Length: 277
Ligand code: PXL
Image 1 (cartoon, rainbow, N blue to C red):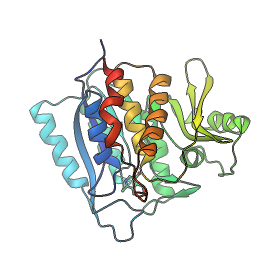
Image 2: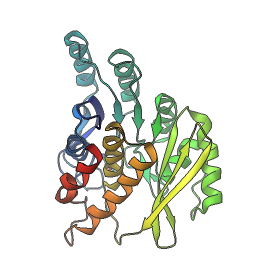
Image 3: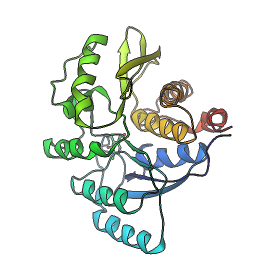
Image 4: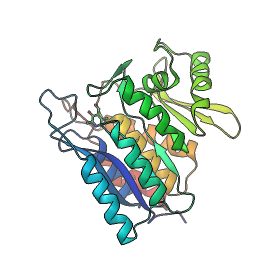
């Protein structure tokens, strides 16, 4: 029997259109049977790959929310963070972890600050410094190669073969006490992830056929499926494999021309079921 019904907290922005962050995490975590509370960090009209996005920082509201939750006795069995938005958010989320955690609640952190060698529009080195400290809290981190490079203070120099990925993981490992799921690993016509298991010190790879096209929000889908499957009681490697397979499945049923996100809704329910039964 799998572990559904955990009361967990996810902390991310709420981009009101564009299929990313909370609008992806909530349905996915629900499909994996998790009671998901949310702490929105910012309210955006749409994600920052759109031209005219608005951004309302919710830091003050986050602090008020923590106070209410403390008084009302809410506690969380796991924490999953994604795109936050401002360096001020790190301390607030750390407080949530200190004050509202069930004993030994896992912390899953998707750094979500860049891709293709670059930072997303609102971020700078200071934000990366903040994230580098913040990930010390994590049991698992899910960076893409760009984020891994920034966190490990290494230049982004694609392509990455297995030896180069091994070196990158070796450079990133000492910054925390986490396992690493390194997203966006490519080899020929395949794509997948590298999984570094801190306990054994070993890195394993999972690669599957690459789908054509570039889509936003796939990192958020990956991290959310990983979190849902893992918290339901599946192993970390198996959960990351589920995430890679689900991203590919969602892309395969995406309508032509739908590029700002992926229509993950079509296959979600059927896909999640075996992982929670
Ligand atoms: O998909 C990551 C993400 C989440 N939230 C916002 C973003 C992005 C990526 O660009 O802009 C607001």
